Image (cartoon, rainbow, N blue to C red; front, side):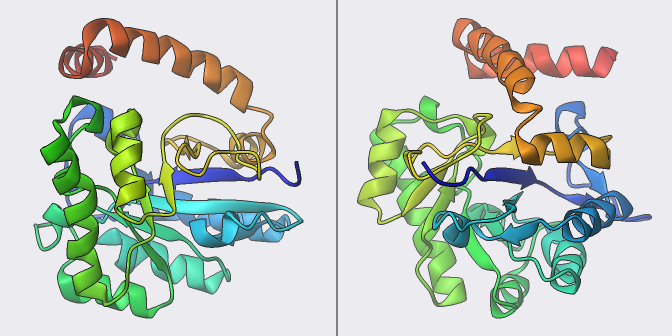
Length: 258
């Protein structure tokens, strides 16, 4: 089977005095401060871990490695994450929502080109962040194929890796991703990946605010994943019962009450 690699999933990073893109509790729980992110990356390096882009991780090198991924294409990918990653000798894949490019809080075309010029891998995170398992065939092509082409036009290079908004996908989404020329599709399923993992169902683990270095270690070694999978199964059953829209409303209400 070879080595197993956990793919870490990050989102926007918080800077003092800079408003977040969203204030919804379901979004904010994924936000780390600059200091927290820097502490995590430094801890990984000091403890012998390598940070890889998705394309590198899919070669499954020997040794202690994690894949570093970011979703959405927030401006902090360039102004916060990139310098910290470079300082520690880490690579990463930044999955960009094509339709958000140039919107307030997101990277502009120029910033996206700058991030690409730093030799980070640029992936696609759909056109409008729609849940793929809700879409018609025509909308799937727009969200997956057209989005990748838009990003490719900006950076001047074909986009090879795709991540699913909200981790939602189905067989039709996988088919369109393959037809569009992507080499992988990343989900939010909680599992480590290996040479036996189907590249169009890659697992990833979201790093939440409040994750300390001990918790990060349990995630990277796989120790924490069994419990996280149990919780994921419960959420998946609720989504299947309620549907995406109602599930999100109920989840948002619960998080606000907390």
